[in-house]
Image (cartoon, rainbow, N blue to C red; front, side, top):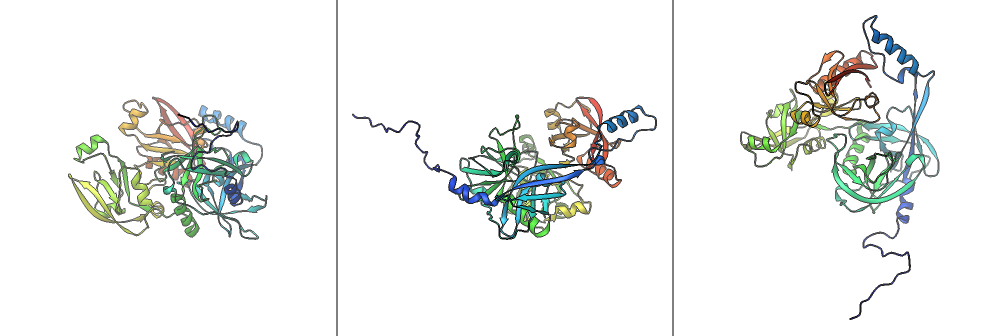
Length: 467
């Protein structure tokens, strides 16, 4: 029997089924809609660091901190510049990017593919999803792209990333969708997409495309021990981004639904104790007084099983479902109490309005009582977190579960697992306590606040910037 062997010229490989021969046509079509973003701000000497902590007159710490501040203070104002990426979603000049690309900038410049420079104004921004919307005034309509359905993209599908890595300008890289529902920085509202397309510093804010040329993600972060791409990049899914961008366009801010609860995971032990058939849903740990949940009759100890007709398989699913629900809408909520399922109707509130009126402390949300503040993610000191971070018995305070590598807290040595014991010489027991004391310091016009940090029993004071 003859065996047929396909012979190919040396160096030529068979094209895998379904793989494009080239991305050239697609890249040529998309590149004009992707922009480079340059943002800058003036750093005055008094803005380069926190104020000196207040000590009693004559204290040796007073002289020590004064010498340190004097030696490290810059002589004159300086201008800091950062680079990132973005993309045009409306020919009239609306551009999407990451909030961290333009955060704090007093000048924002958008650079088109033909090197045209346009001054941009900030329409709105959202810290939680790290998104921002800019507006420029072009002399003619700009090439633009549209959002696609990120939920329709499957793991293994081809994706294309375009951006401005290291300030090099329009750069195209390809890869696949590697994973879904990644959680980074303990952010409950975003289930990030993961890709192996090369993403580096400067790609932030740039689009992740499918092969139809639709934006399915906004490239936001990378995992990189080396500082460069190692094939693990994260993007905000378009189905989340498109909702946020539309709100920023219409209102200049986000309008997220709010339930008024603090929640936690349902462990197998908790499920058994509540006679629940499996560990699912979101366990209500606390109900905010005057919030929608209290008005609907929900109590601590209830387990939310579904919201607005959608199941809640795990705790982190509920915040996103509530946040995406139209404010003022009455939604059906199924919950577990006293060994049986119950249903109630709840009118969804406005999270931002609740924060303004004081019903919710700054940074608080329906996600287990965590607070994001000063570059830190703070959480109540639960038994699970005590075990995870090996916190000594008898320790009181609030645990740091994550620290932004670009934050003042990180530069001062604060790390995940540290315990915040005191703020402004006042003991704290919840993340909301910390938030309120930081807010007080800001109202007093202070630029820094003294925080007592405990790490494995060792105590130290850290002055942290209020902003």
